Image (tube, one colour):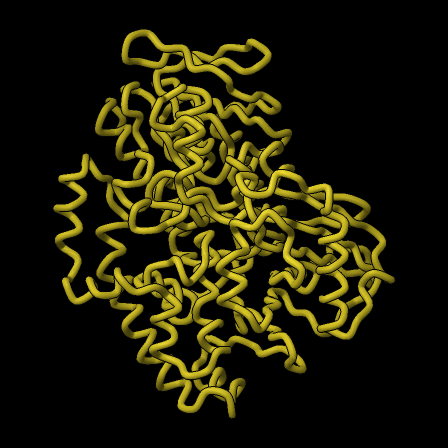
Length: 492
């Protein structure tokens, strides 16, 4: 029986643990935080319950496939979202609902975007071609060196090549005449941790996923239910968990890791080690690799940092749905400076999630839980967050004005997390919420690899290795990491 240690209990670590436990391995999961989940976590206070970070998922079929691979009945119940979300544009009365049905979407934007259903259908058809032509090559493959990566890329039809040199905003601008629809079809770029002006047009494949291929899904009981279900199954299979243990050292003998040590001096030995901490910064901070020292890490493209506000409100709010986006009228100017500014935004763009619209158990009777996420500069650019109260006040005031409901007078519970908090709690490099971005220089074989370059029994899983960030991507990544391990060790 192979003994395995997994550093980190994010979704990637938990999924890999289950895959290995299903193969008969003895697995121990070591977590820095006080409870499992990583970014897919939960926060409770004053009678309110919030998902800490992710609030919905796409590509739900990846979860189904994952449980089937592990020989486990899927314990999760999902609820499809339609409308997907609603968008509030500055200066316009009321929100626009974003429907999956293109005819309904056209009716929603009547008078703003002529022939919307036709235009969106054509745009999504091309996005669907991107998805189906690249997904089996770039997303669901391990890469054994740059030559192998280039060889596999050669299988992608050359008709997609021009779109590698066009960004998502340019692609949307070519499809839609109104600023509003260009913004709607560009929002998915922020899910990659960057802006549509820096994201290659080929990532419009995410529009295809959200509108036609699978949509967006809420998990009954909240997103943290995924973690709870996995931990329950893992414990039933004999997997051990250790919390409040931050790994600070990897003990090696020659080209093999033989143990990992936490900051208290506790040591765990194993045959195989898997790191679910950040695959780039762990190499630099713990393994002391020259290529991943801070000055080099800081030159990489990191995803947005989250500024999050969790509010307990004593009354129901009529004008908010489960997912809501609040946008200004200076989209390009705002996106061009927000991630590198040393100042908090004066008129922030932000996302609002109201879990109590689906779950009565996450707020007291008659109350509402409101989760606000505002993309902000990471700690490379803005280190001082002493202005967090002022930024939260600006956002809450703007939100109140745009939904015609005075939130500040109805707040009975509140918590704020800055990029500094995210870094300290979960070890997110420079407070980046989505880890490494997905530009062409940081995808496939150009991301930190899922097998260590020097230690032959040390592997990685999670958002900053292949195939990338996002819940379904991390689940796929756990399968790719398992494939690496199976190629190197006698597992079946």
